[in-house]
Image 1 (cartoon, rainbow, N blue to C red):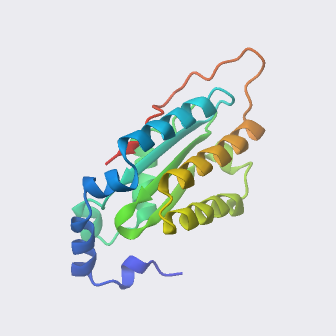
Image 2: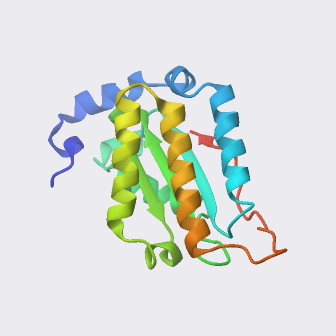
Length: 175
């Protein structure tokens, strides 16, 4: 399926991404909401060895727009840049939100991808998309963290008395 950005005139896509800014991120997810997401991620990671990273971006950098790169390509790049791939059990997960395109991407490391069918990740994205369409950004994101928590508990539970070394920050990253 072709990406929507591939058929949108470049100038229109550039304007859309320059139009969105930090104020739009704060409207969708105010500081209090981001703090609750961080708390949910922290609580989740006490029960499994996985790592969940949430990234919210208003618009793509100019270099991505000029090259007509997709939200998925940006998410994969951030997965590497933020070292989500660099966990002991290869079970990091990145949840990426691109507000300008209303794009949602989930990128999971190979340890989790081997155990969870792609359809499960697609269902997570679909549920989040529905919540976001209704303007329910925080509840949609919290539900996604909860569902990722369930998958990570199932496939990477902590042994009795074991602690997650918390290899990555729990706070959402706003770019």
